[in-house]
Length: 229
Ligand code: DC
Image 1 (cartoon, rainbow, N blue to C red):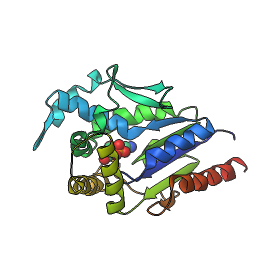
Image 2 (image 1 turned 135 degrees about the vertical axis):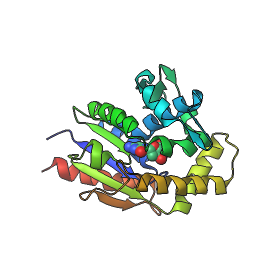
Image 3 (image 1 turned 180 degrees about the vertical axis):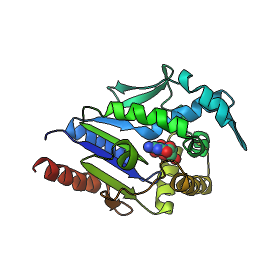
């Protein structure tokens, strides 16, 4: 076996994508940010007035799913694939707090999940993939050779996300970010369809006190161990 499937799941803002991107690059694997796909569907719903505060027209979104095309295009300069919604680069637009506030609701819709899971499975059909999300080790790739479950305290995660959003020029408060992180944790872990749970065979990494380098080193050791079998 020389190419494996690596599933990285965990709570929001645990730094999954930072580690997953670096890991994919060093292994020469493709990296797929499954959360970006749920965010792109959410952006579509916002742009088409299907979701607003206290109002989500789930049924109408379901009828329009066929009109939503999500793709990834590799950006040489950035070194990772950016997400496109109907041929438009939406990488920046999907990272706003507004999208974060609606995305967990959109991700509860089974029809949305069904469509995105099929596309995610297709991205990983040849192995050599690192995918991060909430249900990658449980639903998308239950047979993945390596499953990681990332966690960190809500305060540490909110602080990381807050700094990241400030750096990108967003104007918000730490309390709003903490509230968003904890609300998403609750919705993501309690929804009926594919809730965020640690797969039985996943290896848990609490990265509250770990640097990215330390996390990478741990995961690479696990990969090498699997590949040497
Ligand atoms: O990883 P992220 O924070 O960008 O994900 C955004 C939301 O999308 C998250 O709150 C829950 C949902 N999601 C999901 O339900 N399943 C996935 N595999 C990935 C994300």
